[in-house]
Image (cartoon, rainbow, N blue to C red; front, side, top):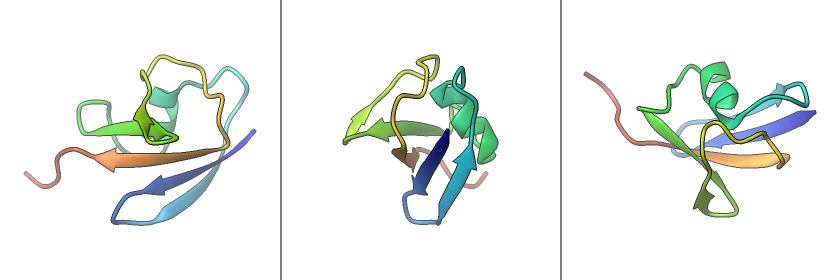
Length: 66
């Protein structure tokens, strides 16, 4: 499955994930954790342990820097 990840304010990435991938796996694939960012589907946040069921998501970074 190919998923388009729009990282708000940064860039857009195309990821190939297997059918069992979770939204937490998407965060990990772009180098973020669930403590740093949230995944939004159709404008609403989704749990990190939910299986990916959308081909397009927005990733909103909650914290940046140190």
